[in-house]
Length: 203
Image 1 (cartoon, rainbow, N blue to C red):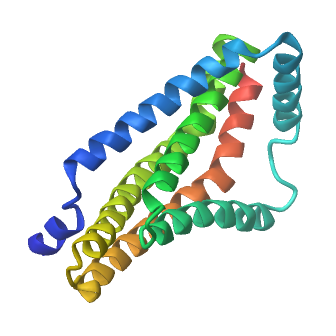
Image 2 (cartoon, rainbow, N blue to C red; image 1 turned 30 degrees about the vertical axis):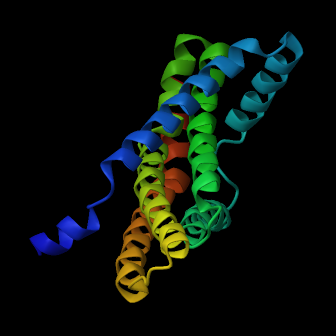
C-alpha cells in the first residue's frame, strides 16, 4: 500500500513548485485586477454579484449540479488529455493560472463591493471547494506536465517509452481527481448556496 501511495504522489517537486508559483501569480493578478477596473466596470461587477446573491439558490439543484460537474470535469479532463500532447505544458500552465485568477478575482470582487461583509461572503463562496479544486489542478497539472515532458524527451532522444506503465499510473491519478472533484462539486452545489444565504440573513 505504501509503495502504491508513494508512486501516486511521486510528482516532480520542481514542477509542483513551478505550478505553485503560477498559482500565486494568478492569485495576485486576480486580486489586483479588480482594483484597476474603471468605476463603470466595478459597478457592473457589483450589479452582477447583487443579481447572483438575490438568486443564490438554484431553481433546480440537479440541473445546477449537472452544469457544475460538466464545467469542473471538462477542465480536469482538458488538463489530463493535454499531458499526452507536446503543447500540453503551456496550456496546463494557462489553465492553472486562469483558475487561480478566477478564485482571487471573485474574492476581491466581494470585498470591493461589500467591504468587510464581502470578505466573509468571498470566503464562503470559495472555501473549501474552490481551494480543493486548485490543489487538484496542481496535482493533476504536475502529472500532466511530467507525462508531456516524458513524451517530448522520448521523441527528441528517440527512446522507447513504457506507455502502459505511464498510462496506468496516469489513469489512476485521473480517477482519484475525478472522485474528489465530484465530492467538491456536490458541496459547491448543495451546501455553498445555503451557507451563503444563511450568512446573508445574519449580516
